Length: 321
Image 1 (cartoon, rainbow, N blue to C red):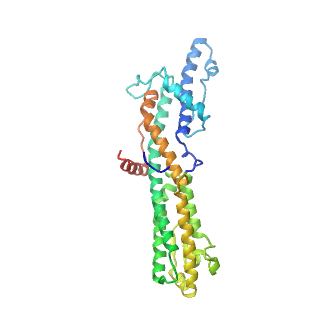
Image 2: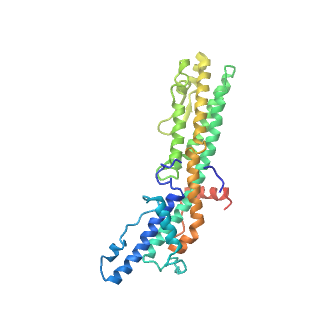
């Protein structure tokens, strides 16, 4: 897959190939130790034999705690490469009946199927956010190019157009950022929204000209809706009383806003890093899905929500799947 390279501290979504492999290794070990423990119990006639053999280990989800990376990778390689239970005995229901607990293995594969779909949907939405940031950066650059000769009407039109663009950005990703949304727990997305909003609210833009940021130009963000609005009467008054200050404020704001958007999209920074992590885990699942299903069963097919299904369709179209 060809795409740019979030922050690795994003809860639940920072799993790259190694982290995903580590957790999967733990689940593999758990399932197989249950099988081995059961055999030991039968062989020695002791009810606690499986515990001694490690058969009572508790399972964990794909996004659970991770073991040591190198040892987990070695464990996964050994278990999946030399398995005695194999993948040739899947039942008509898609379960590997050769396993001690085929139902747990099947549920694990169901979770992997769901993660496959979710990660692709997240990748699509974060890619869209990256594209929007590029456009927002251009708007900031436009303010930086204003000068004293710029017509008042043109300044007013540019500010209104920016308010409309910012509101479109906010509405576009609002559902994604709500609790349970695709990007709700993605640090890159949260940082992007926060940084741009803080740039707009910065009261130090224009301080040398006696102004306190965009708020003195009539530009504000509603604390409840997150939407921007422009008080044209307040802007007209500022232009009439201190046009050079208005232009200077907008120039400072434009430079700062454009820089913020640029940094968010910079190589190995927030959004490119998260896209890179998602890309790797998507590739890992794709490369290993057949062998995982042979080992643990097919699992239920993912049943995405409308939001996920829409983003997944966009991902599949972009990657011609």
